[in-house]
Image (cartoon, rainbow, N blue to C red; front, top):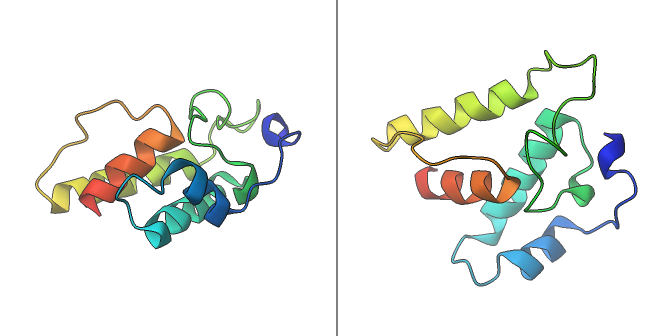
Length: 106
């Protein structure tokens, strides 16, 4: 994703320290979710940021709109929520939204 190419590299462990250390969310879970999102969306994990929007910075490049990464993330999130008796009842617009919601229902 060229939209993320010019960003400073931040290791997932450092991103956790900067943005999630006081969140109460386990560091291993945040790092695993970051890596999973990176793998599914084919982006470098060290370029992800919590405020990245799925519909903008993490959207597929033109011509790849049928990329399944977004669909897989959504399907898995809904599956985790169902197992906990929840629905995805909040907007999941950013990577931070995704991490915090999945952390609740994982």
